[in-house]
Image (cartoon, rainbow, N blue to C red):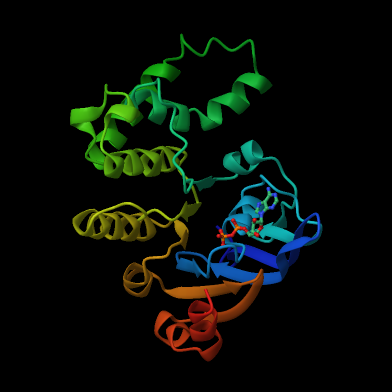
Length: 255
Ligand code: ADP
């Protein structure tokens, strides 16, 4: 790994939708191994920023760099191959597949590329599928999903569905993990479990960026917090400092 390089750098990114400026010259850097919080009122551009980082949107201006290499406008699947994984605010699980199959799809990240590149290789004979199934089993254990592995997500409680979405993102063995409001709809105990899981993910070397409205969670979990308001970065720093920043207080009271 490149020593000390930032995992992510956003340089002057502007994203417009017709007349609306959703991101206005946003710049930020995220060092390796950090849990970065992104907060701000509704409509301040947080999800748009995730969509830019994960390739769903191409910004009109500015650049996105992963470990110093520009990836602006790269397709989401290619960013996935470069180990950027994300979850969605509104879950995007495959409802008519089992939990295990949802995880297998996450694990399949690399094969999609290899098969396209080398279609004549007898992947099945090489035991690739068996290896994927073993890894799915390991994820099922790690995320406490053994009892629901063969169920369809829609039949499961919301908190479990959120955990499946996180497990599927982790199936991609990400280097940078983007979590969009992972605590939404969770009860207190589930939020505590989530915090523990995210810390363990960070401790395993993954850089995490988390959009979150639960300020208690942001304050206790994040190493650094970036505040967006009307598409602009209005504050950036340690959680305790950001929380008392006058612009931040004003932006939240004005929400
Ligand atoms: P947040 O996640 O902070 O609530 P968003 O990033 O979802 O904010 O939205 C920022 C602004 O951009 C909002 O005004 C939203 O309506 C607008 N926006 C986001 N995506 C689109 C889109 N695909 N088309 C048009 N407007 C959009």
